[in-house]
Image 1 (tube, one colour):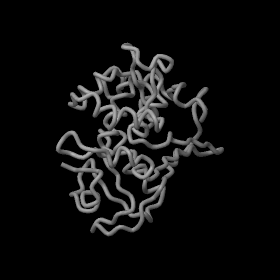
Image 2 (tube, rainbow, N blue to C red):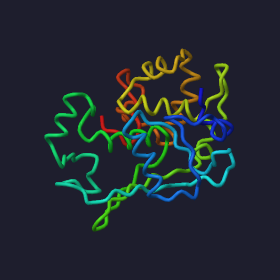
Image 3 (cartoon, rainbow, N blue to C red):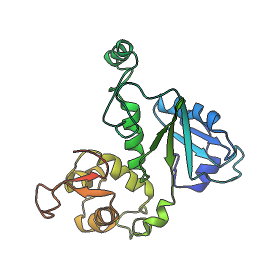
Length: 228
């Protein structure tokens, strides 16, 4: 199984529908093709900065996707998560009715959710007179959170960034400690707190729904940037 935390898998794992490698020299216009293809399917891993033969040519720290045209209706770059507007509502209603789209405006929401789940900054939208730009930024997250990467073990596997991303994705809705532990197949509350919950709260990736009552039995946790 493909492991995105393994440099060998990033370099040599067989490319397929959900895994693709692109040179760091790829033009933004060409880069948009696989991005849109994966976004319209089930997602995937787009590895930038590694050639098809596994040679590392540089990992980009961000990329910008260009979309011709301007935002429709009342949608602006500062309210793009809250306002959804269909250029052709009849077509969108039909697609929604037949489950070709899960929800209105799901593309933008999905980008925000996936970036949060990966521990990355929110996407940055900019608009010119004739073009909309979506900038997705990266950073060396493992160096920013050494407590998570170098945490002690209570299972045969080390804690990985993928483990943390899994928790953050699960917590796009408010979850109790027990719900998160059950989801992660963990039973030791002390180890869970030390390895995951406390570092994520301290780093600001998770927040309490009842911050004034940290020990409340009704306490839940939600990924930062998500609305309850």
